[in-house]
Amino acid sequence: MSLQIRPATPLDAGRLGGILTDWTDATAWLPRLHSAAQDIAHAAQMIERGWVTVAQSAAGTIAGFLARDDGYVHALFVSGTHRGEGVGTALIRDAQSRAPRLELWTHQANDAARAFYAQLGFEETGRTSGLHNDESLPDIGFHWTRKAMA
Image (tube, rainbow, N blue to C red; front, side, top):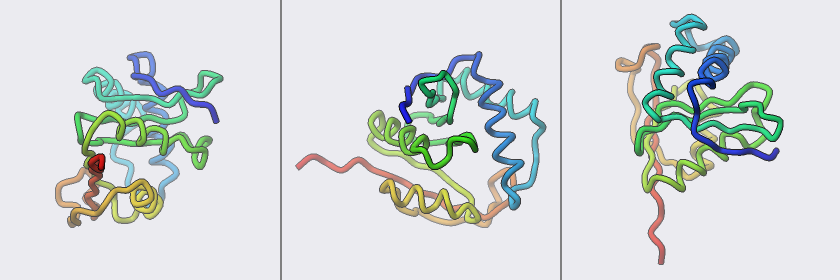
């Protein structure tokens, strides 16, 4: 799939919120804490802060997005219709090209994300009981550091 990685614009908030909502609906172990309207508002807030890049197909469809504040990845979501097409990898590789170090958290129950991040060179930094995330679900911290040139 041919993708363009670009900064998100305010007009993208509806689509990004939809991706968030769809992912939550499709994830049985994840409780629904926010309405679809709240997901859109959250996406708009991340866009306003300048954190979001999107992966857009040649047809103009937003296939996924990554929200990053310097080296901290707040969110990475790929549309259900585009999973397995390299969208998440393209977004992470773009972030890795822009930051010498990345950190993120994912839920322990998210086996696919854990394997995905490990495959892209992330290492586990710790685990928590979920006390500090909105869902109160156990999570895992990961980090990636760019290797020094020899």
